Length: 623
Image (tube, rainbow, N blue to C red):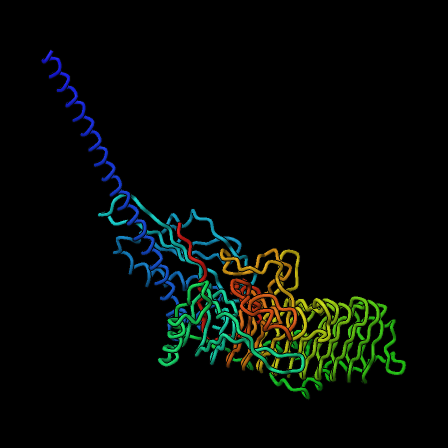
């Protein structure tokens, strides 16, 4: 009996030992496997970092080559050779620097500007050819140097690392002959002053920066007041041309939490190659193009006297001056081209497409639908639409242009005025499809005495140049909707820019910030963003207090730029302090600018020209 018990004990010990060994082996195997997985994960992180680092280094190298003395300077580039120049630079200066790398397998660059992606280096990086690319279908590639590229880096892990790990890192960039201000959500070449709580999604530029919790606003009696608001929010970085004192001040603002507490504070970075525009040269070039297209070449002598003389010489000296006037009023039954050697008044036109060429003023007063062709005048052009839809082609005036739309007006062509220009939309939606050039001040406004919701609106798909001051007030500005796109407004003012009382007293249905969408309104909101870039060669002041200012694009001042904004709903300027008291946190700002590079790719032919290409960084994708 004792022998049997000893045998059972021995068997139990053997089984227990076997179980312990098995468990031990399993633990060791798991530990080894875990270590291998950890090593593979570390390798994954390491080579992803190396890939991102490489595309950023390549971007920086390309930027350095865009300057006037380097290989990609604008004077050496044509629409036919730009891809060759870029690919040659990648082959000669970039790829050799990475050939000895144990983490970079291959590098290529892909042109996605047109309808189909094109790998500029062929099959040297085979995986790049199997990727899916978003292409842009740009239709001006034969006339403009703008190109959209993807830098593609295929990584590998070093031989000493565990596992076979590869990553594809892609960075999209835009090379374009555009001024630097179009790279930024908001900015100023001098002082950027952020009062209250504007919200900016994208990078910001400032030579110097001031931040205040108090937003300025004005009552209807023109009395200036202030209201407290949270700090500004920036989802992006702040760039500056390095100045020690300004940099120290900006860094102090970041370090002392002078920004909205619900997002991370921005970083301070340097833009040492900021490219300004030559406003006068660009204005003259673009006006010259419009006048040349209408047989009104002024040979770079853009004066009122020269335009008047040219209109008279080219159109009104052939002995065929047509004067169907009764007490200065044009006969409603005229057709074709009307020429007059004196001022005329137009009340109704039976036939569409009538061109008016007048030595004197043109006054149009419509109370029914009217379709007018081109208007060319040596004097002033005044248009008032009381009722019925009106459409007009080009308007060329040596004097002022004044447009008052109490009913819709569709301005289908370009407008050139050598004097002041006023466009007013009241209780209606009018539209502008061509480009606008004001020789002096420009005013775009609605009815200041509206009650209830704002119903004055202008829809634009235009580039606007104003040589004087620009004022926009008391109306909604929107993008002109096409079949599948929304139009854009790019406004450039040489004088001061003032934007006030936009979308006045309106607000979003859902006032809470969306943390997963960069604190932006829901896309389903009725209040849609304006697709626009606004620029002034001088100073600018913009308000988001009673106004609701929401832009996809950017705002920039060559001088000082002042922004005033609060968060939350505002119904009455006289009660604003009580309505907003401690009630703004985590509510949408009334001044939002969201950078949108697509605006840049739509109006390039009419944008200011510069002396070098700019590189605009877009998204990075890791696969």
